[in-house]
Image 1: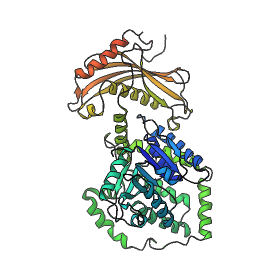
Image 2: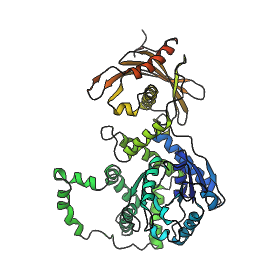
Image 3: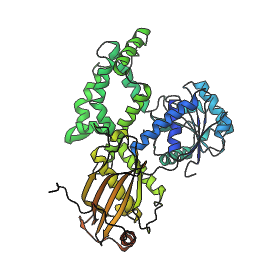
Image 4: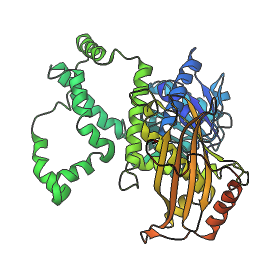
Length: 496
């Protein structure tokens, strides 16, 4: 099995619904079972947030969305599923019973993952007839955006199962991190629980309130962790001598009695009320769905920033996003465009995301350039200048752009862009792009661009190969019969 054809989700809460969204947006049909009377609404709201987030995350072509159906039983849900994800509440006997039902009804080749955040896989697989295909697949919220999933096998889990789960996770844009030994709470939650325990003591002892504590995290080490984690960050703190110097300098601090990591705070009614009141004062002006949307927008921005890090090679979650987009483009194949027609090529369809808006509530200036750049990229892929071509050391660089802003593009408006090829020679492609409002075809903006073929390794312009030139020349010949755009060749200035 090289891909997931059908997934089943048993449990449709915050995690289960987000798993369903992750599968659906990867083009996978999902059968959901959840006896909650409002499961359809809850999962639908999670999916709506996921679609909104993906619209901001990438302009790569997603596959057609999978079909979501709600089953009346576990047995119906898991029928013919390749990957079954259990996400019921964290109670050992409940999970064990549900997993035993799944195991009895699932296809022999199906993988069975549990979203547990702390229960041991050996305990969960105890009563299963086919425990070798069971594993913990512990994700992080929101599952549809955060790419990590901890993969943990029990005593009876086969190595083949873990290897297969890691490969299949990559097809839905997730990084499967294999945990070598099963321990309570695995790795991520071990770290989170340590921080959480200390945070509760700081609130209990009136050292700070919840907002101050959150500010300490998000304005300092939280930003470092998002891109370099813990050990890589501390390696830098060691200076030129690296990690060994850091450990020698700061290691003795570990023996100082600063923390209460091993003491559990008493979560009595008074502390619960204190934390609840402070949390209400901090964030109570926002509804939960609104907070989720704000969180998603911020996560998207961080991932996109990391995608451009490391000299464009990507870093951390940004590199995973770049790899995911590369697979999306490869799976999408060539655009279905009639390149021989005497009309501009429709190359891109987008929607104005909330994160694109400026203080006027319109699409901000640099997003126009992004849409025009993506239109040029679509043209290049159409003529054979794809990821493999670029990795081989050649590409087209944009050396000149002239943009006109003619209308307003507002949040959530659908747009599309067209391209007219004005001229071509062995090194250059001269194009004229137009952004249209989809609702009425009105022209929103235009861009005239000159693209130059380069040998990236030599760092200079070079002739394009005939395999590329023949395709773009055919488009240019078809467009030669079109009237030259009135704005082509125009310069900035006032009429006299």
